[in-house]
Amino acid sequence: MSKTFWRKFFSYFGELHVESSPSTHNPHLYVSLRRGRYQLCTAHAVYSYEDRYDNFVKAFKKAKLDDRKIETVLVLGFGLGSIPVILEKQGQDYHYTAIEIDEEVLYLANKYSIPEMNSNIELICTDAYAYVMQSQDKYDMICMDIFLDDKVPDPFENEEYLEAMKGLLKPEGLLLYNRLAANRDDVKKTKTFFEDRFLKVFPEGQFVDVGGNWMLFNQKIK
Image (cartoon, rainbow, N blue to C red; front, side, top):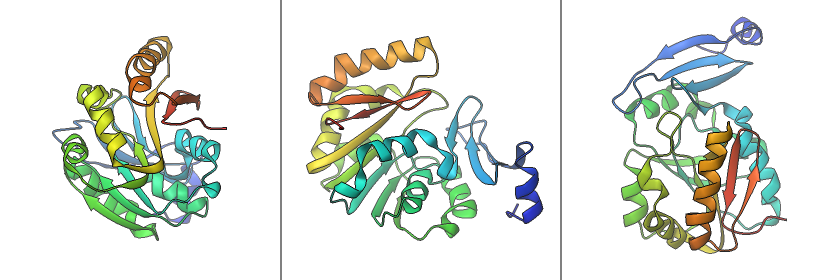
């Protein structure tokens, strides 16, 4: 489904289903058109929502990216590419390495969102855990946005993985780690993860409540 004028118009009155593309990783994976934007969803979570993926919109503004020297960005969990879409809209011109394990997600991204982007994006279909543990590259910014439906898989919460991500950051590099905080149970789990694991690896870290999510940073954000 292309974004014709009338489809975009009617999407402001209700969500329009575009395509379902279930996979072994995401049995309930679909694209819809909502408020003029493509949205990638599973049964219980929104994976991408173009420039309305507000948790990262708010986090990037909080991080004051214009004051930072950023050229290379590692995106862990690509979805439909909301992160480069948001950064393009904010006037940023970066080179992206994007890791996504689900071939169906990449199929949908190539069909619905990537043709509309101007950014230089290297897409790699692989397990983000394996990539982080093995990569020797360095990045100015890492955006960790990996969920299996509405859960962060256990391997991405362990200290070894956090240390490996730390090792991929350049000096003064910025890490943004997206966590759910939609209800009391989510907040409790995320708070425990932040205090017991994240701060062990990133002692200068802090979190920002971005509404339904917490964004964890590896450094103090003014």
